[in-house]
Length: 222
Image (tube, rainbow, N blue to C red; front, side, top):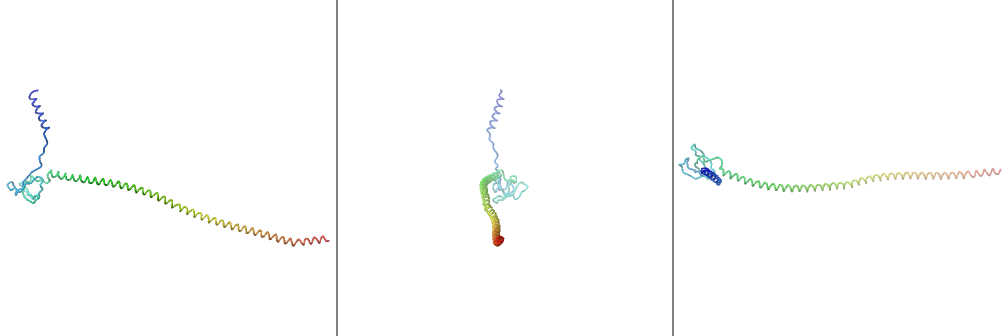
């Protein structure tokens, strides 16, 4: 291996080593400008302004200067090239981070509200189940009461039917008694007629028999 090759190798290794040890850096986003009494560098400086300072634009000229009013009410001239419509990146980042923190806080609150809603949902489901159970019990009780209340109605109907049957039986019994009485009266009448016939027959026999005996004696006397 030649000396040139060794030197080249050494330089290459040194370059890699230096690159591996170097750290990354960025330019600071910070600029200072001057607010002057007139549109030009020859005018007196009123104050210094830094990046991100907010001001009201009053007018612009053709030389690249703009008249502005700062937040503390001071008016002066600055170079137009240092002005922009949007805030600088650091302020935008600050606002974004602020909004992000606000969103995180809102997200946290929403999560808490969600957890609370889930808890309320569980409570509502539990209450609904309890109400459903109570409703089922009440339904069973109502059905039982209907059955119990139906029994007296059924008994009343049966009693009414028994009353009707009793009335019918009483009517049949009265009719049977009347028939028996009629038959008894008829039997008594028949016995009475039979007795009267016997009596009449006895009277007739009593009247006829002496005459018959008298005739026999007369015939015997001859």
